[in-house]
Structure formats: C-alpha cells, structure tokens
Image (cartoon, rainbow, N blue to C red; front, side, top):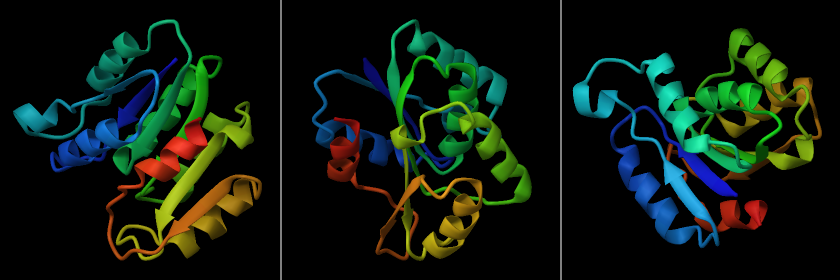
Length: 166
C-alpha cells in the first residue's frame, strides 16, 4: 500500500505536499507528483503527468490525496486503476461545471463510494462548500463532503486525512 499526493496547479503546493508528508503519520510510503510546469513553465501536460503517475503506481493498491487541479487528474487515475485504488480524498475541488461533474460521475461509477471523501472550505474562492455539496449530492448523496470553515484554498488537514485513510 502507498499513498499518492496529486497537488494543485501552483508551485506553492510544494509546501502543502511537504506538510502532508510530515504530518500524515502513515505506516506506508507516501509519494507525490511535482508537476512539470513547476520547473519548466507553461501549462499542465496531462499525458506527461499521467506517465509519471503510472510509474509511481506500479502494481500495488494505493490511496489518493488530491487538491484542486489534482482532483481532476485523480478522476482519470481512478478510472484507469479502479481495481488498485483503495481510498480517495479530494479537497479544494476547483470547478463544478457540467463537464467536470460528468467526468466525476463516470470515474467513480464502479468505485465504492464509502472509500471516497471530499473536503471543501466553506468559502473556497473557486467553489464554496454549499455549491459543491448541491452538485455532488445530485450524483450521489452518499458521498461524504466535509465542510471546513475557511475563506481560502488551503487544505492543511493532515489529521482528518489520516483518520479517513487508516
């Protein structure tokens, strides 16, 4: 078993990754992805990032912790590796367009919804908890969505994440 962290778009997410790795307290390996554009600029190159993720995953079961744009990539990973994915934490979901919701719905269709949880800040500047809950409940009202009281896009909730993963 391992846990894979898929961060948000900004290079400032390196700090979040390091904090998670330090504070998760997992008894297994915790790995993360540094997006290519953090080093070389430009946009996120999904194909290249998926190749890196494929190498990290290997054949064993794994958990995912994803933030912001990482949540969209996590959906692709879930779809591709459904039999290997153990638990999924999505936090700071940045968009709830119909296209993204369709992607969410199709990716988790065969995934045990007891093994997925969303954390969303009450007033996240991208999508509020209230708006996210309304949309996700239309897909499946059994998916747990945890409201954290904050007006930002920061998700330093290692203790909450650890409780879910154990």
